[in-house]
Image (cartoon, rainbow, N blue to C red; front, side, top):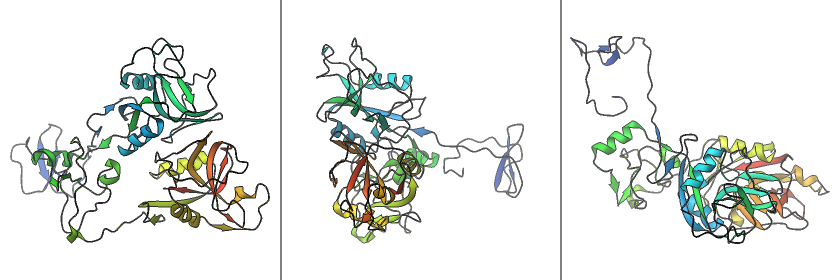
Length: 396
């Protein structure tokens, strides 16, 4: 078979196969060989998406979910990120119910104490009436409890039976609240050939105790061995998608330096190991949608060096710093501020900050000033407006 799987079933018509190399199935269901230049209808087989071991797939969304226990919001974000996932978004009541069923069982009743709630961290953030999901999907299913909650903060799913907010979403400004959480990510499409090779080699190939993925196109989607590229000298073997993580292989020094390449039009920054692309004149939602469509997110910034790199990608010069003009020379980032709680939309930790601070609101979207000659040049500003169009945005 052209997909590499074993030819372990035969249904030849009498007198076949002949010396012709291609095979057709007749209306009687029998196989016949034919010249490969002949014209017939074709049927394609697409690999079925599959969740990693331990993850649960919801048929409605086709997404994969994994619950975690007792973590602060930052720790929950980091835990999901390590598994190439995000804190869950929720788009229907059935998905909401599914998330509640996945969470660890309820502890001893807390008597509906809002200071010590039992709940599940989600990827939702509230910003003075503008609500968003960390995975960039639309906030299309309103399920906020609302009664007395602050207008800005992280969103969790209340999961204590018997309480009036059971099954609803609450908003908290607390970064230290410890709740369970649910991660969510796309399934992996495993090529039939990879599955067949794995079965035939009896457990997956390995090198230096690290599982070897097959095919360069799988590196990003599986999150495995992102620093390993196939050489021209050998074919990489199969991968056990369900095997526990055992760490990346040690690259032999004879392989030489690894060459990184970004898609055409993207710029590579060695310090972060990421690719960046500059778009122009868009609202925040439109900019983020554009980034998502090309498999990225709005840029996160983790050092002064990276800040300078992003600045250089969209640099503009003007001496006009009158009120309102910074809108014309600014860059949307993936940063979100929520009353002192800051996060990046790509799920990476907020470990570096560069806020201008003077007179800015405490909640809103974070943008970078690229207008030299201004006092806030190269620094981050916050705006509650989601409809303004900035000159640029950067995808990462």
